Length: 481
Length: 145
Image 1 (spheres, chains in turn blue, green):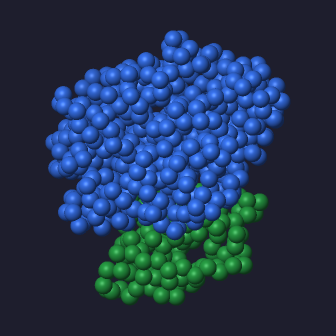
Image 2 (cartoon, each protein chain N blue to C red):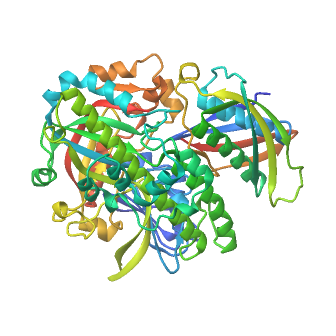
Image 3 (cartoon, chains in turn purple, green):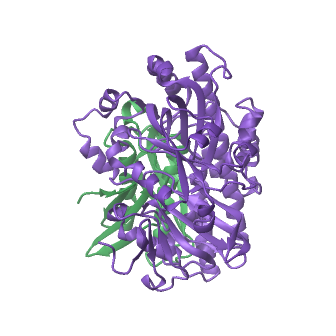
C-alpha cells in the first residue's frame, strides 16, 4: 500500500508532498507504477525528501523507476539547482563520476558471431583489463594524466585509439570544459595512473549482444540498428580516479556546508553554494574525472574493435564497427532549461540517471538531431539492455532525464547465498550466454535475480513519455570484472 | 568478542566493528574491510606501510582511516593484516584535527590466493555511527561497492 503521506498523480508518478518532511522546499516526484511501488524503500523516499530541502532546488526532487537507497541522494535521482541560490553536491553525482555506457554497432549478424563467440569472449577478457588489481595497458606519467583530464576521449583518439568521428557521438563530445587538473589531489593522480583503460568490477561490464526486438523501426534505421544485429555495450566509469576525487571533495564540502550554514538532513548531502570557491573547485575536479571516464570508455572501445578484427580476420570498416552513442549516468552539468516559461541556467545533478534530450536539441550530433538523444540502458547480464530516445516531455518534466538501469533488489550476500550450489555460468551458457569473470562471486552477485526486471523499469519511462523505446538487446557474451 | 560483522545491504556492504577501546575498534573495522575484500583467505605479512590519517571528528577519522586502506589497496594492491596503532588521539581531545598513525603489515594482492577481491570504492558517512554501550564500542560503516 502506498505510504499515507504520498499521493499517486497518475499511473507512472507518485508525489512526495512538501508536507512529507519539514524543510522541503519543493515536492518530490517518483516515477513508479503500482507494481514497482512495491519495491519502493522508505529510506529512498526519505532521501528524495531530503534532497528537496536543499537550497535553490528547482521544480521537484526527482527519482526514476530504478530508484533505490543511495548515499544522501537516491540512485536514480535527478535534482536541478539555480546558479544564483542553488548548491552543488558531490553526493548528487556519486563516487563513480561519469559512470556511463557506450554502444557499438557492427554489421555482423548473430549467426556470424555465435560460432566464434567463445574465442571472442576469451580474447576480450584478456585484451580488456578487468577485475580487482588489474593494471591497464596504458602507462601514464603525471603529464599524460593531466592531458586526459583536460581532453577526455579526444586524448585516446590522439593516441590512435578510435576515430575523431567517435567524439561527436559521445555525450558532450567526450569532454567537459572547465576541468582543472590543478585541483586534483596527488592521491587521485596516483590512484588513476594505472587504471586508465580498465573495466573495473562489480556491475561494470563489456557485453556482446544482439538486437532481438525493435519497437521503433524508423528510429532504429536512423541509429543503424537492425534485428539480429550484433552490438557491443561497454559499461564503466572513472575508476579509482573518480572515487578518490569524490572522497577528497566530500570532506571539503562538509566543511563548506557548515561554513555557509546549509542545513543538511543527511551528512552525505554535503554541499556548497554554486558560486562558492568550494563548489567551483569540486566542479573543476569532477569535470576532470568525467573526462578520465570518457577516455576510459574510448580506450576500451578501441581494444574491443581490435579483438573483433583478430577473431574475424577483417578490418573495422568491413565489420561495420562504429559508435552509436555514449552516455553518462553519474554527473552534474550546467544546462539551460525552461522553468515556469523562462529560460534558466541550472546545475543538473544526475545520479544513476541518464540525460534524455529531445529532438532538435543543439547538443545532439547532426545525424540524430531530428530523432532525439539515444539513451542506453544496461540491464543485468542474463536479461536485456535497451536503446531509447530522449523526448520533449523529459525536457519539460525531468530536466531532460530518464532512468539508467535495473537497480538491485538483493544484497550481494543474499545473491551469493541464493546462488550457493549453482553454477551461474552454466545456467547462462544453457541459455546461449557465455560469461567470463575474474571471480565466481561476481557472477553470483550479478545474477539476474539480484536485479529488478529491466523491462518493467523501461516500460515506465516509456509510458510516462520521458523517453521512448527503440530496441531491445539480448546478451550473448559477457565480460565481468 | 567477535571483532566485526558484515552488514547486508542492498547494493552495497557494511561493517559493524566492536572494540573494548577505540584503538581496537579501528583495528577491527580495518579487519572487516579486509574481510570484505579478500574473504578469509590468509594474508602474509611481508611488507609494512606506515599510514597517517586525520579527521575533524572521531567519525570522520574512521572514514579517513578506512579510505586510506581502500586507497592503498586500489592503488598499490596492498592487502593488510597485522595492524599496530602508533598514535591515537586521546578521548576528549580537541575535535579539530584528530590524527592517528598506524603500521600495517601485509602483502601484495594475488588473485590466485586471495580470490577475486571485492573492489570497495570508498567508506561513506551514510548511517555512520560510533557508540559506546557498557564497556564496549561499536561502529557501523557502509562501504560503496
